Picture: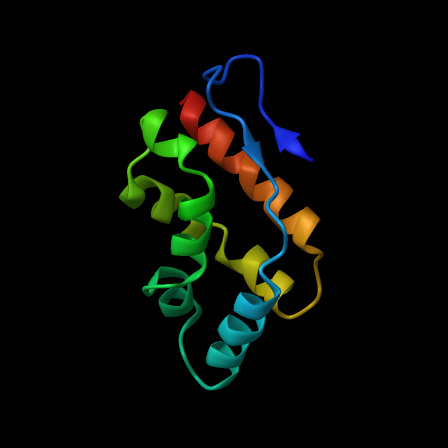
Length: 107
């Protein structure tokens, strides 16, 4: 299991890289190819943000709100697009997002 945390992050904030959402990836990538804006694919019900939020429930206990998490993920949209398009691996994409979330938790 890959985890990311830093020394000054809240001790309870340990995020793992979940198994790649292969079915979701196909659905989300297809939606973008069909003309849906990437922001919509990220934020819609059942979108990338909902999928990640459901797996990282510890974020709510660490002071993150769904809105603050959405802001972090939207700021990372280019890298998520690169994963959807097959230019990044899931581990690369998700690990870097974890680092970004943990840094935001420190701020």
